[in-house]
Image: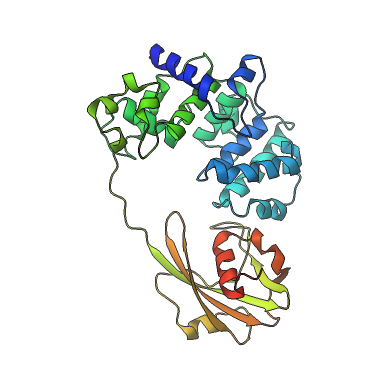
Length: 346
């Protein structure tokens, strides 16, 4: 175990990624600590999102709301609009709830214990461990998908995912010590992201190759073992693009549920069978000459969706009228539908 740690930390010192929110190992060694707010914000954004996609949002958020108290004081709609495009919008609602709890209950300062971090709204075991390790140098066990993959290969864990998660977490815990815990957590993440990749791992560049049981067996890319995925269900709906000159009619989705609290196109419910033309027109948000503009496809985590798109000109109904030029702030599924109706002239 000590050899694994020494080799990986030396590799991280030489090859760790430079990230917008990261304080590098040289800076840490000089006594500089990462800002808990920036660490927490980055971890929330990176859930189900890649680093290249999340980084511009992180820079935009930290420029507009440089401290957790600034974010806590902002209106919900402004934060939700700034989040548009990152997906998984419950994260944005949890982001606001956590920021306000830190501001209200902790004087604008993040708790410096794993237990204290876990008490904050929206901070599950992983995020609390990550903020604890990276921001406060606590010896927490930080296990994300990259770390699970490294552990499964390093120890050739034969049990398939997701059932093997507790075993992988226990294996990772055995490698955590009081020595450089923040750097250790980030080193494991970087190894999984850049070397021990899901496909075509570059074992020749891996500092742990001599210790890797999966490599010794000759097929590291087959780990972690996986159970067959269930078929993703498919749903159908109708999206309505109501225009009035350069304005477009939107609605605010309910605060809870998928895409909760976001501005969106009016839609029907999403169900397991297509809507007929008669049904689609009957459920429209206002009386108008609705014309079919085709369909758009979108894939969510747990289901895929076909949206029939109808367009009409004129005002009516209980809609929020917004300039077409602001539509880039819509969630991507509705932006697709709007572009289909407006021929991308937005």
